[in-house]
Length: 246
Ligand SMILES: [Zn+2]
Ligand SMILES: [Zn+2]
Image (cartoon, rainbow, N blue to C red; front, side, top):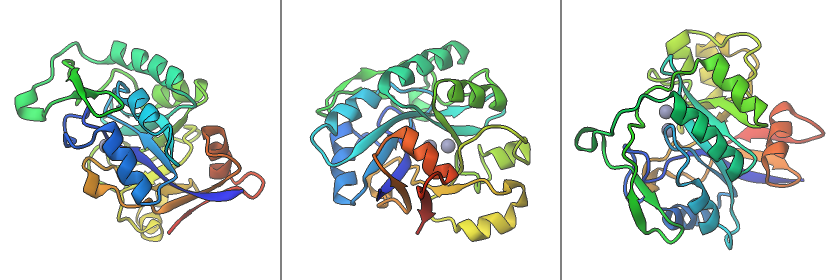
């Protein structure tokens, strides 16, 4: 068992709101320099750059967790993490079917770059990503769990696109693995402010949209191996596995 520094919410240049410098090799290089051990790639409603980041990290002391930041019908952001790239791409197909068939407004929202593992820009994704999928919070969490994934409502301490802001509470029995706080949040203060969080595990992730926002990962995960099944056990405290926010 050892402690892994994890940042489970990072965007690439594919997210229109992220900087073009967020290429697979640049993210990997910065994460390794900061001592991050586990890093999840979570672009808005897409996972097209996940495999490029996995390949960019192959020789690095860094494990990439494949994922996506889903926007549900209620405008709630949920970080969805999966055990492998294949499952993530299967999930992406499901999400694409539920997104409106509209084009990105690059002039207003920004470019959506698909990259390779060397950081080369291969082209732009045309479909509109910054919008809601026709899927409820409950439906989304159940579908992620059915794929052996982890569903983690994002930045729940923020006033926009958070489950607490949009729904006002966490539906009982929802099946989420944890709640994510934004990078500078104090978990104790957030729990005091939002009693509706109950005893759900709290983690902190960077939600980095540019390299300077990668912060070294405040959350440590005690695991036997750096993989999603172990993270699920750490979030529920199985056999000395645990999660701590610094
Ligand atoms: Zn978000
Ligand atoms: Zn985000």
